[in-house]
Image 1 (cartoon, helix red, strand yellow):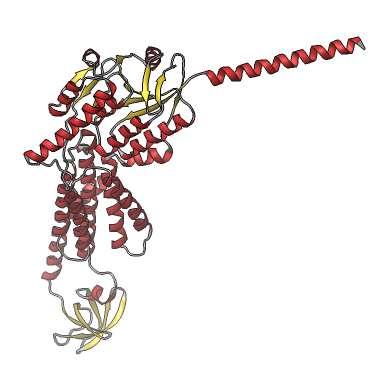
Image 2 (image 1 turned 90 degrees about the vertical axis):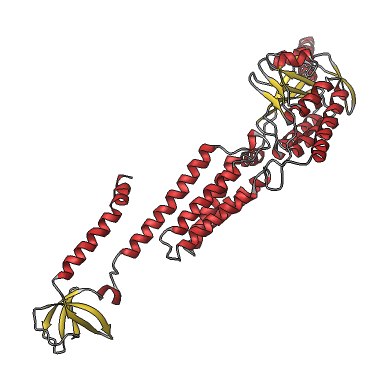
Length: 469
């Protein structure tokens, strides 16, 4: 009996020890600080603003120690920038903006976001500045407002960034210079002038450096515990990534072009369905993308007018003039879209514009060539195929008889008196099922050969081009 009691006591001790270790491990895991990482690499767009808002909400719900926004941006839309700033100011979780990696920059809207952060840091070999506002007109071009309006815009931006600087205890005078004079400084200079708080070579070094600092959030004062913290990256969702890709002006331009091309083929071949469906989807996606950017809508209208000219040229004998006009209109529209000047991030690539324009021009020049070739080809069936054909008289025409033409015997009537059997005649018309013929002259075959040779010389360069292709 005593043996069994000792054995039971040992098993209970072992069980209690295991339970204690499990509880201790859970307590340690719960106590381990977590820092959420948000990466912004590119223009500040509405999609980026939505991404930051979701990340800050998630960090607050899950009790994160801090949120690090790793920033590398040439700027972006002021509306999206304002949303991000409001989210940072209202966040109960400390937000650290880290301009990184090396070679990164925080320009334009990036300066305001950096100033809004509870802690601002930069990696070595990075820079910050050039925060002058750019006014965009309704046509997507840089507007030149009068002096009063310009002062209002600049003073509003200055007031906004000075308030952020005073709230975070940073250099307000330099911030004003960044807006008024578009000044730009390096990371080391930024620390020396109290534009940012520190320079950190890496994210772990940054978390070690800010450990123990106290910041004021919307929930009150918070002391950071970031040393050896677990870094939890928050990635964009597939939907956010998709719409962020659509915010690329090059993607918007390509989608718009392909959408118009699809609708053209649907209208040129009614009932084909697939080109119309794909073209409609791509066109709507392209228009959505353009709606998030600063574009010149006159350029969009010129591109649409180009495809209208392409379509009309299918039904009007313009000898390709309408197609040439369409190519010119498309090229001009593309060049106008290229001049979206709010930020380099919102400008089209010249290489993309040239590639798309050359492709569109090639497609429609090929169509013009094929249509012209089809129109120049002699009809192969029906009444038109017999007109001008040469026939051999099988039964004398006096004035009616029989002729052999295109492998068939036809009843024929002579318009030039009696024609004996064996003579060659030419079909010049039809009355019902009776061919109207006249004697063929000796000069006619030579003339037809010369005409055929001239047509061959006319199309030989394009024929050679397509054979090489």
